[in-house]
Length: 220
Image (cartoon, rainbow, N blue to C red; front, side, top):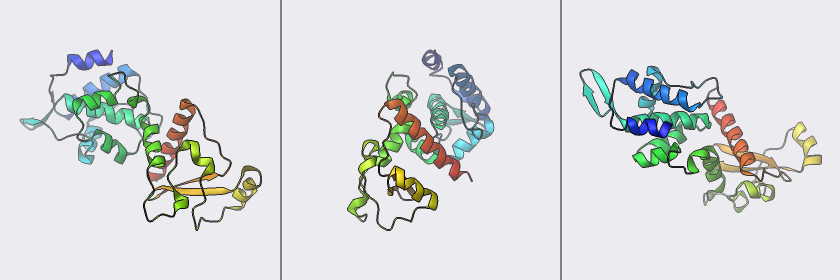
């Protein structure tokens, strides 16, 4: 249904921020997409669109009609993609990376209009990308790259902080606490005998939980 609606308005121009926001809101309402976080609106309004423009999440307007900016199909796809990725708990910087400069077909694929799987697992793909990317050369080999399936065998990074009393108690039954840097400013702490979910649904839930915590922390 959404695909047909988008095809019918592919050539349409939206005069003014309000018109673009209104069209996106209608499509999102029809899709049933909902935001779990109270700080993120289910549908965009004029203020939201202006914020996205300022943050580089939407391309600059195509033209001007009087004092009003003119937007097109690309802007609509970008706006829909931003809301979809927000629903997957991705941070703004990652959403910008995924949306900025993308071709129409890439944006359509991101929205799942071509039946691919990428759009369904964007949060998980992002987190797995962090977990599996090579460690910088300056890092000791113990802080090697890893993925969900190798968390349990990862080594303890040097100079790891001493676990809290509560963590020490847990260690007696749950294994020693270990840590590894995913990227600058982001570390993962886990017990040595931790076993990650093996099914795709469980991995997706884990990735979404981590992304939710990261973004919530960033809003404090």
